[in-house]
Image 1 (cartoon, one colour):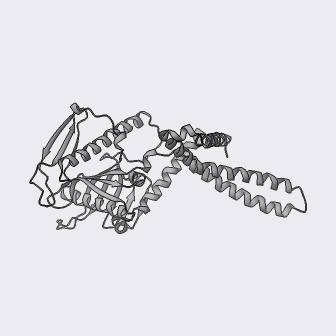
Image 2 (cartoon, rainbow, N blue to C red; image 1 turned 90 degrees about the horizontal axis):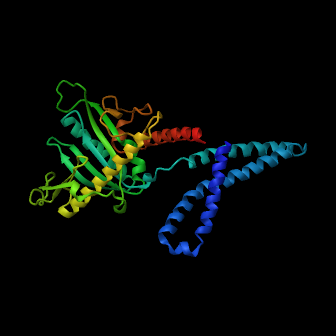
Length: 360
């Protein structure tokens, strides 16, 4: 293992010991906000320090075995112990590298999932509905709550746009690689000559933020309009002006919400989505300023950023970012997304490891 990595681990070990002392300080215990912050940092370091301590012990075992090799009577046993220790050493070094990867603090958040029909008219809207159902099935298998914020229905089925909140810690970490353009190739039901049509949808995944973290939004920068809800039936639809449309004038961002019967609740939901989008736009701006030549597996959500193709005649799904093709489209559409999510997460971690090795 590189000396620079060992030096970093030694530094983290000192910080870990320092945190242990601080958490026992009565003054810090009384300061609940600082105590929570330090406790979280201590918990985050526990796994890497535990692994590092095991690695240090293995290093001692290797040194002992090397000394025993000089003893003719103990040489055979020492060789076996040396071989076993070096295997454990390699495994621990791999674990340490993974544990040292920078954590995305947003991974533990809930998320907003936005699916929009792109090119392809009715067929794109129908596919938007299937994509949303696919994501909902994936969430349901994990007992995650999916709450629709706003839906714009297509007259022939599906959605022009649907926005939902997936309320569960860690949802963003699982869904974040879905942002981007999704292309579908299939024969529409209305196609009489059996020709394959290509349509597209755009998916955007944004980490949900707590009210205390909301960016400050000047009320003067907002235009708030009310209108009557429309969509899938119900005695309250088209009877009251409960739906809300908020326009953020400086950026032109528009957010609608009509899922709740209460205008007040719809406004709160719309402001939550607006705050999330403003924060995401600011993060994206900073990332572009700090961009490098290294590829980015996190989709931007742009229509031109095509990340995946679903080919129904061949039963094939292809993720273009990592060149992965699976002939299990039916299972994927039913919500079995792990077979796509896990490989790209592994590739992402491999890219992070490569970047880490360049830094350390």
